[in-house]
Structures are given as structure tokens and as C-alpha cells.
Amino acid sequence: MSDNASLPFVELCEVGPRDGFQFETTPIPTGFKVASMQRMLDAGLRRIQATSFVHPGRVPQMADADSVLAALPRDERITALALNLRGVDRAIEAGVTTVDLSIALNEQHAADNANTTVEAGVRAAEEMISRARGAGLRVQLGLQTVWGYASPDDTPRALIESVVERFAQSDLESLSLADSTGMASPKSIRSVLDSVGARVGDIPLVLHLHDTRGLGLANVVAALEAGVRRFDTSLGGLGGCPFIPGATGNVATEDVAYLCERMGYDTGIDIVQVAAVSRDVEALVGRPLSGKMYRLVAQA
Image (cartoon, rainbow, N blue to C red; front, side, top):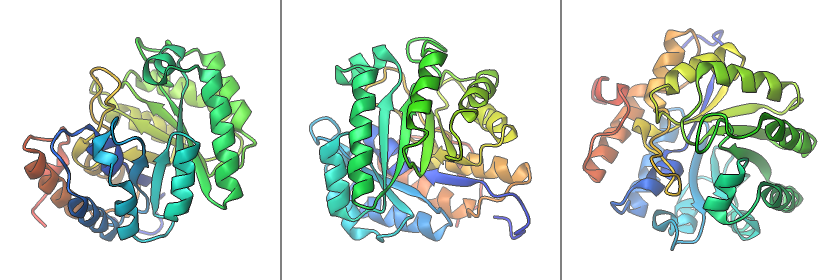
């Protein structure tokens, strides 16, 4: 962790407790989740996506969402994912200050994942944003499969641009672009950011990158060079989507923090402390994680 306050800052949002734990078949105890997130807050993470409000029959690991949030600090560092109006209402009841929303941008993905259409998802998101903002919550909107679903770039660029323009005036806290299937490349990262950046206005962009094809860190570098300063990452490289065949983990928090530091950016994160949490997760789930640095740094 850098002590140089003059270094440009890159913010990492820890999504392992949601995007990572949801993919595991080994039950993750509520107490373990809460303790892990508290340790990550102590390690300098300024934003943690703690859970999601989904039906427990579809994602059993998130069945304890209310209990998890009740045990964590009620401040802007803790967010939760909602996929419908009921989820937004639960987020309001739980007292989170920021709710994360997420919609599909690829028609086939929308049909396969939720038996819906992109347009229906956009209209639903507009209602969810209105409900959340009316209750005083900040909203991050995530756009899924921006870089492709069944094949690279099969999400039309014109559709991406039109949806971004539609939400550009929606009083969003941030807009997240997700490479849900890990099909992005540095070239396509730069291309999408060029077209979206011209349409998003002053809304901060966040990238949610998966490392399915081994290009995760290369894509982080491309995004950094394009001016992005916020990324979703996951401890040890946990992650994936239960509804996307072959999906693998997010870029690892420790790996991205190390990369940023080597490139002259400050993340404010103690990699050693985060790595210790990742090793405990590894022991619990009983398999190696996909990240690199959590195994290389000294024991905390």
C-alpha cells in the first residue's frame, strides 16, 4: 500500500462476497462472510458489494442477505445488488446507502437469463432507479455482456450507445460496464470506452472484468490508459455467473492492486491483509483460487 498521497488514485470495489460467493457450492456461513468483509474494510477497501437480493431458490448463497447487511456498518462503503423492484425495496429496508442494479444488453442473454428482452430490462431499470432515488439511495447501474455473450462483440455497439444515452440523465452515482463472459480484449476495451465516454457525460465509469480467457489484467491496463479509475475486483479471483456457461472469476483484488501500484497508482489497499482473507476462503471452499498474488505475499 502506497503512502504517497500525490499518486493518482484507483478505487477497487470488492465484489467477492456477492459475485464470488454466489458461485460456490460449499455453504459460506453468515459469520464468515461478515468477518471477511470487516477484515477487507480494515485492509482499506472503500467499497464492498456485500450481497444481492435474489430468490434463495436461484442463488442459495445469498439467502442470508438481510442478516449479512444487519451485521455490517451502515455506510457508503457497503452496497448490495438488486435485480427487481422487490430487491430495491429490500435494499431500502436494509438501510444501504447505495444499491447496485444490473441489466442485460444482449438479447440472447436477456432471454436465456431472465426470459425477457433488453427493452423490458431497461424499462424495469428506469422504475428501479426512480424507486431508489425517491428513497434517497445512490444508484450504480451495471450493463451486462457489453463485450459479448455467445461470441465476442455480439452485443451491438449501437445498442450499447443508445442505452447509455438513455441513462445519461438518470442521476446515477456511476455506470458499470461488465465483460460478463470475459470476451473483451485491450483493443475492444478501448473502442467501447471511446464510444461510451462520449455519451455518458459526468457519470463515473466502472469496469467489471472477468478473466475467463486470461486477458483480465491486460484489459485493466487498457482501461487505466483510457482514464478509467474504478474497477470491480474479487478477492483471490473468485467469481462467475451461475447462469453463464463457462464463466470464471473476476480479476483478483490482490492482482489488480499490485498491478496498479507497479504502474504508479495508489489503491489504498493492504494486499497482505486481503490475501490473508483469500487464503481463508481457499481453505473453506477446498480448492485453489485463480488469483496469483494471494499466494505470493507474506502471511499477515
